[in-house]
Length: 180
Image 1 (cartoon, rainbow, N blue to C red):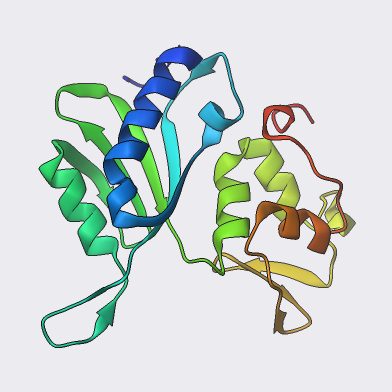
Image 2 (tube, rainbow, N blue to C red):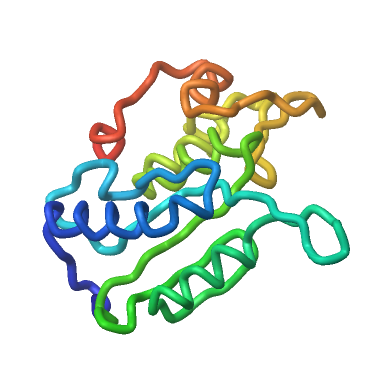
């Protein structure tokens, strides 16, 4: 999409499902996030969160699967706008107007990354903003590198529900996260 252009939820859902199915064999877990998951009527870009399968390189060293995801995307006809080890922004060469944000994570970071990538932007901002600054995050907890840390200890947040529980917040369905 060109800047500011949006597509319908139904079209975005179909496109997200296609890419999810395409990447599934390279992933331990993959889910649609962002405005598609929130079921917004108009979608600006398509977000997916995934845990790539680790692999062993020719030296026998276990590697995080970011390179495999990158190779699969290239082979699938995607071009890169951003190609970091944990975040990739891509578009299909046949549909250059639609961007995909691909967030790579680990099982330990899944809950935080999936929650934030689902958004909305305002919701995610309130989630990480301290309560003393009128946000929702307790002052004893910090979001850092895709994890929650409380008093120097890593909290276990393998699922979104764990993030809400750790922050002392009630569960908010994805489709309600755009309404603050």
